[in-house]
Figure 1 (cartoon, rainbow, N blue to C red):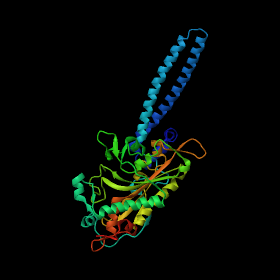
Figure 2 (figure 1 turned 135 degrees about the vertical axis):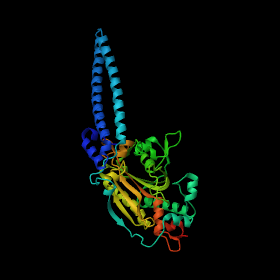
Figure 3 (figure 1 turned 45 degrees about the vertical axis):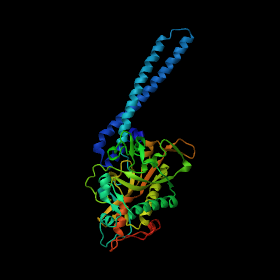
Length: 423
């Protein structure tokens, strides 16, 4: 959520931020209304303060008149009238603040200055790593089914399309990948391993900016205002909702594995074969909290941690800086990590590494107290996938396919799987 000072003092900065995202036309009216409401809010606050001051003066005058044995009925009526007026103004103030908050909840973050304007076509490749496979291969769904690793048909029978069953060595591969990722992040990168709930309340989803904007993409619990998480970012970030973190504990780093649930509304027919787009998937998440002046460096660090996993898996990948129009709702700057899939001849996103500035922290009330003991400030939050499993598994199968139909296991996974080939 945006600082009210932006509405009050830097409204053109907000308009330019929406313009760079390509959303000014659709949000111009909301921004104008927010500016109007903020003006009304401040005017009403001033009016309330003036009337409270007048009521206090009337109350003092009543006391003085009574002490002097004089009639104070006029001043008493004046005090009552002011009280009623204050109550009316405070009701107006609450209504204006509620309407303003609702608008602010719907406005995306302002991207950083060096994020290119425009949509997906303005994304830029920052770097590439590894060598793409040139030998013939097959799409991962054929490989997975031939080896008995993946059962798409029974997954659909149980839950519908977009739900997958991993079997035998396929199930062990999922577990091995999760353990590798958690071990690297916790033992080498310094993240605190965490086990979090996969059902969260509305306040948690609002704090990380999934709600109210994206409620139709979420799986909700019937008869309860609770949701299945779309990512462990939600519970990890909300661990510190409405808390003040000591500056000495920053930067703070957390990692967690969780299943993730997304309805993917509006994506029908888009990359739906195999593991490319599913409704339930496994992911290891990495989250960081830091002081505002450290968030740039922390984003580079977090991204390097996600990259390290892809490198351990010996998969060619590239890092893409997203343009403003392709950057997520709450993000100020995002790097996508994409692995190459030779079976479908596409780059597949396996991680988005983002800094949110204080956008999430302001919504969730996450602050830190400076070392000098000054006034608490909002932290900056960052997160990324470290990594999402389905597309990693797809790329692993396609890149490591042998002529006899077996699949080589990357060196880093062999201690976890106990084999060097999947057959």
